[in-house]
Length: 243
Ligand SMILES: *[C@@H]1O[C@H](CO)[C@@H](O)[C@H](O)[C@H]1NC(C)=O
Ligand SMILES: *[C@@H]1O[C@H](CO)[C@@H](O)[C@H](O)[C@H]1NC(C)=O
Ligand SMILES: *[C@@H]1O[C@H](CO)[C@@H](O)[C@H](O)[C@H]1NC(C)=O
Ligand SMILES: *[C@@H]1O[C@H](CO)[C@@H](O)[C@H](O)[C@H]1NC(C)=O
Ligand SMILES: *[C@@H]1O[C@H](CO)[C@@H](O)[C@H](O)[C@H]1NC(C)=O
Ligand SMILES: *[C@@H]1O[C@H](CO)[C@@H](O)[C@H](O)[C@H]1NC(C)=O
Ligand SMILES: *[C@@H]1O[C@H](CO)[C@@H](O)[C@H](O)[C@H]1NC(C)=O
Image (cartoon, rainbow, N blue to C red; front, side, top):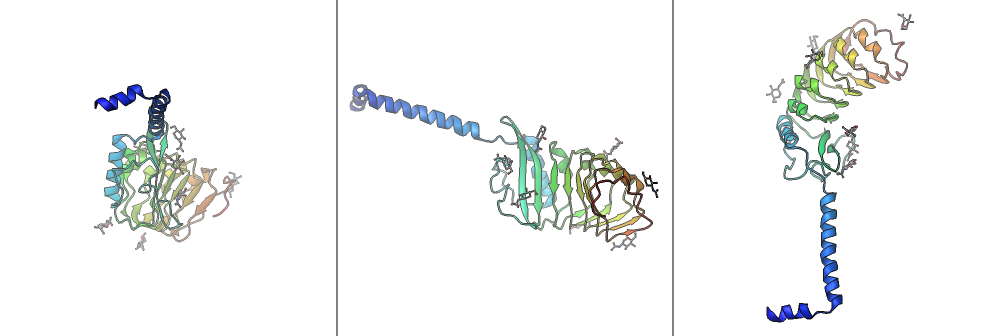
């Protein structure tokens, strides 16, 4: 011990300076690494993601990782029109909230997750092209979803009235499922809706005239159902491109 101490106390001032600089460098690097790390979402949101995974039968999310830092478990960098595995968050320096869940073409065989409503910032939910069955959960009425894509699954039941409560929706895609019954007039409350895809279900009755008030609608697909009567007067749909 003694000889080493000796070396330091007798070391040249330039060596000491170098040592000091090293410490400063390490501290600076550490600060950089720490300030650059993305916060986890709140525990309630991680718990909600676990429940969502159970409900969907999604078994490969690794909850030892941060769902918000774009690691390859939560954001698969490879994708196609038919496959997508993505969780994104809306983050500030201090906090992150889960905002996007896209699980397309993953052979998921569960149900639509009621626990989605436990994510207060969820804006985008796409589980197209899976084998999900059951109906649309009532809990979703309280969400602020903007995009909801459920195409090509085995979903059934009626299109529920409460979908009309999600007035933030800009895009609603229910096509290629087994939904039946009337389209509820409450969808006329979705004043922000730009695209509505209902084709290839077993919908029936008259298409509700209330939907003619949706002035932002630009794409509407209805084919492959059992609608009767005429479509309502669409002349207020100035933006409509495709019927
Ligand atoms: C994750 O990716 C999204 C979309 O590419 C981007 O907007 C976001 O800033 C990324 N987040 C982090 C923590 O890198
Ligand atoms: C997954 O879907 C999102 C939203 O449509 C898109 O922004 C992203 O590029 C897709 N990811 C891949 C890998 O294709
Ligand atoms: C992120 O959150 C802020 C504040 O809640 C919101 O204004 C913004 O639109 C969100 N951004 C995205 C991409 O969802
Ligand atoms: C959904 O599928 C599961 C498993 O195949 C089945 O047990 C259940 O009865 C189905 N539910 C509905 C509503 O079709
Ligand atoms: C939808 O909104 C109406 C009117 O605000 C409300 O009475 C109803 O309880 C809501 N539905 C659900 C399922 O939350
Ligand atoms: C479609 O609905 C009608 C009743 O509205 C029913 O008789 C028919 O079996 C349904 N078809 C399919 C394929 O589910
Ligand atoms: C359709 O609606 C427009 C404006 O709302 C109105 O001027 C027109 O007379 C209506 N046409 C029919 C056939 O009801």
